[in-house]
Image (cartoon, rainbow over all chains, first blue to last red; front, side, top):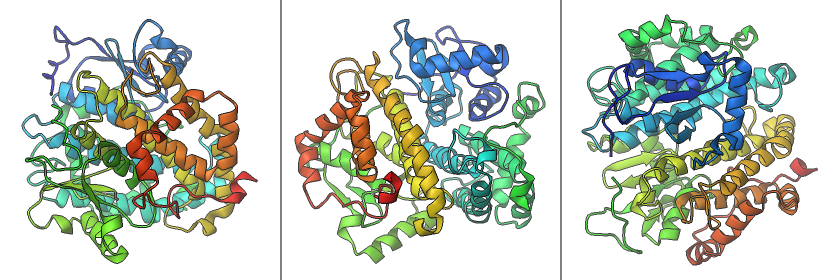
Length: 265
Length: 265
């Protein structure tokens, strides 16, 4: 059952504070969670902002080993950040965090009982497909090795990504926007702005940073006009716009979305 | 709100038939969906069993392009199979399908409102982490190229997977089973058998097929005893056992779980 949305920039009586637990220094997967809070204007703290990097890393690790739950909390230990701490709950896996938050932040339609699985389907395709594959362009062999240790393989994987996979993901997103499940307006869910639109926005933004030439070409092709229209419409929303211009928005670094000129040569 | 579970091996009055849409000839991600139906003994049809391979491929493609929805259905076009057809709904993305099915098949606790996100968290770690990374051992450069076209890179990625990632995933699963959220009994959710146990079962089964020597070593180490105890306990459940011995269970082929002797040399 969908909880009542939290009120603007404040905690309701029953809702505990929200804390995002994520590495400092890059947008990463934490960004999807941040965008939900920022759009909804709901108060949250962010370990990437509020603590020293060392302390943040220590806190993230303690949630991964389960030590942070020693005080009687009964959460499954997480595999990797981001995590959302909400009262005595520690929720991880990005699509799972967003599923938990969206109804609480008013970013999931309440009058359509199919909206939850339809939007989760779109979000999983973006997060565990599009974003995961983009990440592996610079880490095709091992996530534990530096890019510099897998450069020849990375160049091959990146070439395949931009030629085959990127148009495939954008084409699928365009089909979703063409479908009767989208209907009127720029959004993924018929006539309603939802959290999935924020996810697609960040996917286009990050990919445009990582592969600027290729994304410009794809945009000019006109084949994905609805995808880029949604991207522009989300970017113009006042809360998103203010956030993107604030220092709460991290700069791209050595995370998922990286720019390597050699990938576009 | 959780719907009432469907009754055994029959359709209830209001529940339409379940159809799994998946490629023929290998277990693949469709296997996770099949295991839910088989354990719950709920009737389902399976395109991998019931149609000619060509027809199945055609049907899968029509769901991907959205053509199968031409008759006024309002589902977002899927990116890739498996899909679940249930009445006029077409649900895709494996963790999403399982989230949709689990309460309907009685495989999600009804008396714990946190069970849904906790189990989804575990399932996403297994599906979009463990299974996706295992898949990429034989396809590190491009999913659209054959294994034979990326053998040197595959050998590197497989070596890293078995040395670093596989123990990491098993260690995390063991920590979940150690945690107070698991508690009594062999299952991932405190004292209750759920769909997540079926997912971990298939992960261990498939990985043992793909990397038999390494999995035998890891088992002998004793570090993951609870993971293997869960695996054995699921395999001994009468419905799972009967299914695994039936011809409804597909043999491993050129899908996610493949055996290449050179990966363990």
